[in-house]
Amino acid sequence: MIYPYITLADGTEIVYTNVFEEDGLQKVEVHFERPTENGFDTARCQLPSYKWIIRDGFTDEEMKIFDQFMHSNAHLFYKYGANGGMKIA
View 1 (cartoon, rainbow, N blue to C red):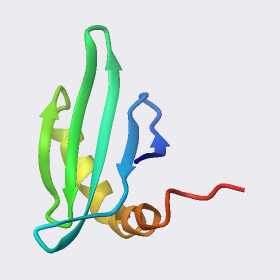
View 2 (cartoon, rainbow, N blue to C red):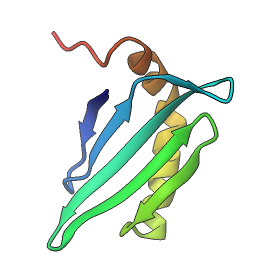
View 3 (cartoon, one colour):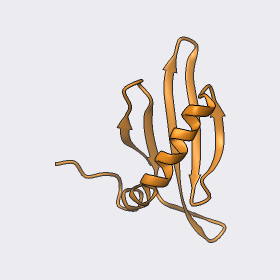
């Protein structure tokens, strides 16, 4: 499953997956997408390695911000990804 997390002011949507196991590790993937005239800017990061497995259209400065965002929110992606997404009242 993919769950919504937040939409940034520039229209970038951030979503995350369920926690899944691969190579003996519990992992979560976090996707960043922003609409453009020709499609989408896209980036995808895999936790716990913080490895960017897809990057297309975002600037180096934006990627630095996303990297900081990932480090600050990783525990929440694991928490919510293990429990079927965020529960909003």
